[in-house]
Length: 275
Image (tube, rainbow, N blue to C red):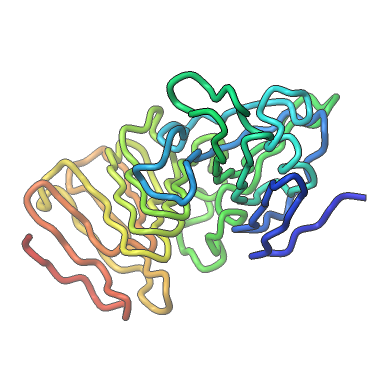
């Protein structure tokens, strides 16, 4: 019977392997033989931006591997079994279940305990012809019923074109191809957007900034909803032929010539703030 993990729980899986459930998904539990597609951040505990040694958050590509086949370190094979698709977990992996006494090149010193945040985005079970993806919004904490974005945008969401930040402060920039959705999750995130296609740029619980390499006069923005903790703004280019995008839980728009405060924690109306 698959193990179950409660939201927020920290579980000792044995041999010093610790799983902390940051966000619980609703998909199928992962099993050995599944080909899993993930986003991840690897760091030397305790976490800081300086302690990150590897990550794939700055790409829309997923990292694929067969669970339980020895394609990744034992801490991943053991720690991700039975975790549901759409979950976000943090693994603390002792050296014995990582790279041991040898380490890994110049990146991982010998006998290193490692930390990973792992976002379970897709899975292809044995014998399946197509992968199954987590819902690109609901499973990562965005309340879709509260977003008046238009059904056409939501219907066309491609789960492979979602860029995820970690649950810490991130700098999300230079993404190719351009994602449809950028989720900063938690932390004070800075998201650089080119806005050549419709995008939902969602911050999290921190104080998030979206940077646009254009003057403020090139865009107009208006509040769609300001009630509650997730203010939503529509960002419209003044030039013809460019797409509309949306900003969710974003505190500040940083143009090339102007910094605009969209909403403070109280959800106020937009007000310019030259910085």
